[in-house]
Amino acid sequence: MDSYYLDEPLKEVDFVITAFQTAGYISFLAVKYLEEQKVIKDIGGINLDSMREFGDVSDGLIQSPIRILSSGSAIFIASQFPLMQSAVEGLVGQISSICKKLKPKKIIALDGINADSAREGSQVYYASNDSKLKIDGAKKLEEGAIIGVNAHLSFMTKELGIPMAILMAETHSSIPDGIAASALISVLSQMIGIKVDTSKLVSEYKKTINKINELLKRVQRPKQSEDTENMYG
Image 1: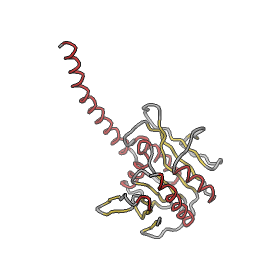
Image 2: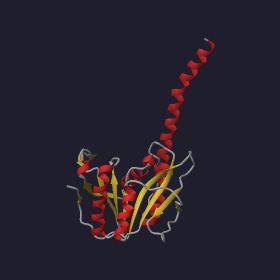
Image 3: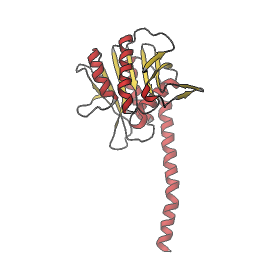
Image 4: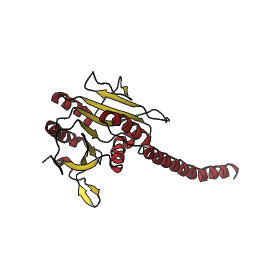
């Protein structure tokens, strides 16, 4: 039976932030970094019948793959695994139950949006079920489509009378994109009033990219040498 649990009692909160699979693994990376920096802490989880075959291991403890984390007046709900379509309805139902209990003023979904090409930074866009909502540091997404769990959440929260915003950072990467995750954290921080230095997140990403590029060069060199030999052999 689908259920959620909390390891410590919670009163009403101002924000519920959700983080599920995204392009560039942005939302997962953002939440993981906030946890590593001790800005948020793990306080519970959501158990879904449709995800019983998945388990998250942390410090040797097997837990639900969908974690609930806390930071002052905000809680984060984040999946450690990509969501299956069969899990969406049950997950949204449990988030609805959490919202009814904690009565947040706003729901914020962390997401990603694919960029056409590599860029120096990452622009953050937003879409909302509240036409009056404006978000500093982000551009309104004028056209597009929201699908999956975030679309489901937007209609659920509308029914509950809770404004919801979806924050989407641009990424062109197929590996965890630290620059996009940093941009997402920057906008989120202003919205919920947290402070965190993301310079380490960005520098680690750049190191990873440099290593990948160097590896690609090494892989390509022997092929180029072989092709040259074939030309003159």
